[in-house]
Length: 508
Image 1 (cartoon, one colour):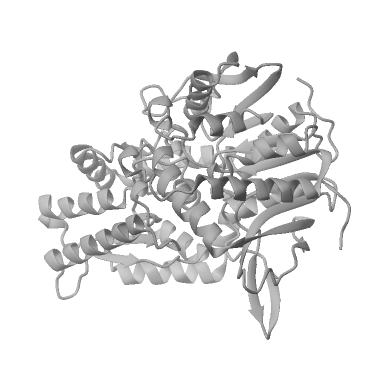
Image 2 (cartoon, rainbow, N blue to C red; image 1 turned 90 degrees about the vertical axis):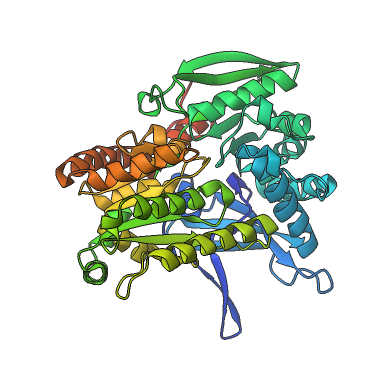
């Protein structure tokens, strides 16, 4: 077993592989989907010395049996060799820390749904305990001056424990969700502890400037020592005057006593090169031709997301129902493909969301179906990445209308799949990526009138016009791809004194 300490640790709740049992043996497989945040994060190990990376995640165990798995394993894959430390958690710990505190209390606040905030069932001591265990697992693997990169809100308290255990470490944190302003964030009774923990970081990262500004506003309001130290102009590609989430400048440094906390705004990118490579495969071309034959000349509209009340799937379905009511000439001429992937959580609010989506699809089909036409099809299980890309290429319109979303990579993947060809993206202005994808048909999912107008505009747009707009968005997605996010993140790390392989650390 490897004993060398690691210089770069990624702390994230999910394991960086799929663990399966084959013929009685445990096998670690590379993720089925080559896309998404886990493969993106693993790519950072390719930028450091071989074997110097580590990953910390949880793995559930039965307390009556005890942890029956290796706590620390070594993985070799396309990103090189790295260590994975699996933190044993019981089912009760997972339920309390993740499903109750994270999903029922923190998630609705982050997405600006304070009326859904659930407090009564929260056991904050268990949340603290699990965060402390993550910090201890990371500290055990880390060199004293390692860069420890913590991901997402369910590990908000890890930095405060890490700072005590590894005072010389460089601690970075990245938020994959939105971050609300003080009026909403301060609903949380643990707001002071959360912010004080995040201010133990050397770098706190967000997708877009608005979330970075909200964080700084919360920090300065709650922590007496926290002061704004520097404000910078946002990247021009992240400024969209008049849009809901646009911000022309944002705080890039806070002073907290004698310490400096750096703040970054860099949206995660898609992997358009992988998407183009996949779409060039003969089996995908065959699948695309099959979809076209199945559509029989009808126009395909897609609504893509997972089962979550923040994703705006109900709003998309209602807009489609109103479309068929308003424009009966479209009956039999369009088809809606809905992907609402069920969450593994058994939370009541998600079950109600899924039932609501299923009920709306059933109602639409009951009202408008004909003998040879079903207006809407619902997929509740994940569609394989390759098959989904084929649908994207075949689609005339893709509706992505979250009520609030940190970024939304699906929108970027749809654009990348189109490769500059005809097609229209109807996009909520409350998705973080909306400030990048300014040639989408932007809509306000809280407004029926706005949603109706957007869908009408999308269906009426001439192919040459939609191709022009799609080509401009494709250029944005290709320029701001996952590689650029990796480069920008390493640049930020360089400012902390962390050197990438073959490069000197950037000096500020």
